[in-house]
Image (cartoon, rainbow, N blue to C red; front, side, top):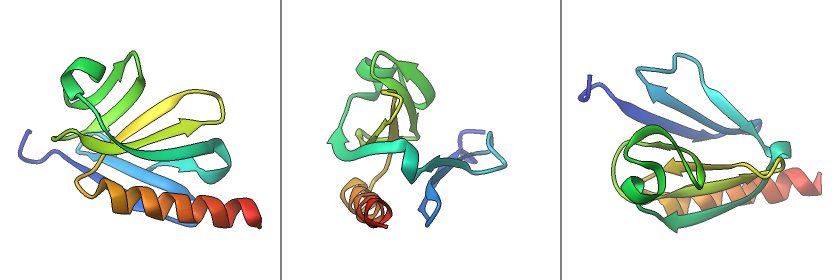
Length: 105
């Protein structure tokens, strides 16, 4: 099971899409109208969320497979979601570009 686990992320016109394999068959979509901000950050999976996987912690919900870098999404309902990513800077830039385009349209 550990070897088949993976976190797929995509930035689409509809929003930020994630799928935590093999647990999610369908994509989870965080629509741009529900995202207030996105920030690339370094975090502690153990201290902040209690480990790796789909976790809940004091800082909100996290989807991560390994490492300590990711993108924190602050949603319009004040909830936060951490999405782990090796390329967290690039991922965050793509999200912020789409957020700006969505807000200006």
